[in-house]
Length: 417
Ligand code: GLV
Ligand code: MN
Ligand code: MN
Ligand code: MN
Image (cartoon, rainbow, N blue to C red; front, top):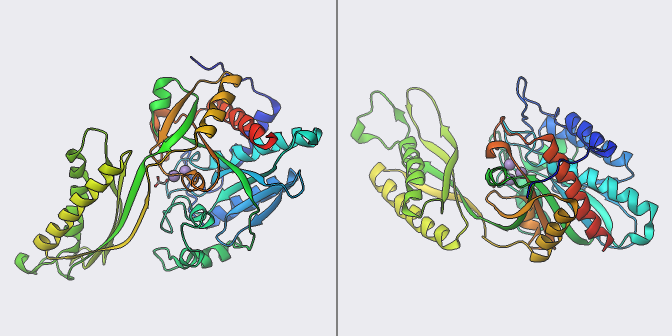
């Protein structure tokens, strides 16, 4: 089934206009991408603009203690809220769609449903809320999904607030600097919905407009510290060296080799970040901080990959003469999204004439956390070429608009009971 092109309404044009303004916050010159890391100045600017947009539509804006930004609209006094959103922070050089599309389309979906429910209050069962989760990316402050981790009780607030960026600035200080630390406690949430770009290419290849996310891959992330001995990189005898960068390099290669121990496609691995000290031309590194990720749809594969990685760590320690410590670990399970949510989204897509299919998410999202606490619907729209976490990330306007129509229908069904 192919999807008929959506007819563009005034509401769609308004959405695309707001989307275009929003994409300017943290825009990387000469590209279509953004640099809007958590609690950066650009993050603060877009948050203030977004708060005004929500207020113009009658929503009341609050921040909680970890900087999650909420727009609340009470239509049924005392009733729980249907919450929808995603994140507006980005990787350092990123596409403008990852997360931000989800927050902007959530806001516009809620604006549309709010107007309908105001016109006929008898249809409203729940109240409406939009959320911009703090620090989903985990690029400046680790780990990822910090705002929704704290919200769902998976991370202690104090631990998150005390986390530092590489310059020693804590989350608490960074949030205070942009005026985004509050004391809001969210009321009861009846359901959560999130829409996101796929960050993979299966939907584009299969001609699918709406991805019905039914499960998530598992992830296991390690922050390693490799400790060696600082020395002159020219004069020190090779046999005397304990090179932290060599130890880290061996782990980078081991992460790639690990994939070959499993069936094709069963395991994804990467080292995305190395921090080398002192990182100077004529110095054998004394210490390297290294981030290594394992991802799989199978819990068994993750467990076996972990065991194999620990064997390699012991070998590198021995052969390179370095210490290797795991400073922190962060993981989530391979587990499903609610079938009721998948079915609600499927039938909404069918009624709108949008081609949909069940897909797993390989990347983590705030819904990865929320689905363990409240009934959750997670949706995707296609990413051109599957490219993400890149300035080249792109999703066509027609898919953005179809996703907005679909999310609006999902929110309508969730809020109207
Ligand atoms: C977060 O987006 C992750 O997939 O790590
Ligand atoms: Mn995202
Ligand atoms: Mn991302
Ligand atoms: Mn993500």
